[in-house]
Length: 308
Image (cartoon, rainbow, N blue to C red; front, side):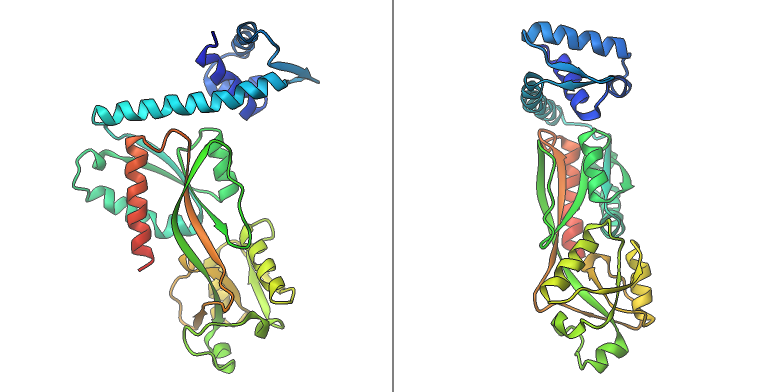
């Protein structure tokens, strides 16, 4: 019979890539990991790993076992969650990774809601927050370094989510055009009036760096409008971009959640709308954990507040 603990070791080897890294994360020695893998092979009756140079890689049988292990371990996590809920589930530490504008706008409200919660157990919840862009945050979730990820996906730049993860939509965040007020007046744009980007093909653009999904969104959105934007400034800090827009340095496409009130800024929806969907992402089987369930409910409250 296959041993669940050894399946967990094989799953971690698939995630971390080496015996040494697997041993470190599981607080074992490398020889102990190798020994457990050898026992797993005897249990399975077929090789589950093979040497590739100086490292190990999964055999087809090993990959099959990992796929089953993901389901089995997720079911075990769900069972543990149900037991915690049955026993009243005293809340402890929950580790969260969230992109910058979600961390800035949603989590202050989450912390306030925890402190003011009517349920005494909910007030014991400790949220450990790290600001992280979606791709590294999802990798951290896969490696079990965080429990919950708040990520986003643009309507024109779909995002791939890791296998064996559950995504729930938290909110829809429209992308808006930000112009200097005097430029909006020259274009005869009333406050809040929708804009056709084809009118702005010759303008200087301020964007995040090319390694971000927001940059890809801007390139694709402008491409649909028939032009390639001339990028004058690059910064992954939206507050920097907005300050420069207000100063007349250029124009920018920015998700509403990232827009702060600034003098000299005129904000407009797009005639051809682009949206950023905000998700919570957890490993399959952990959504029913009492602490994860509580945090998800608080995030929905914070998102509802942010959109009003």
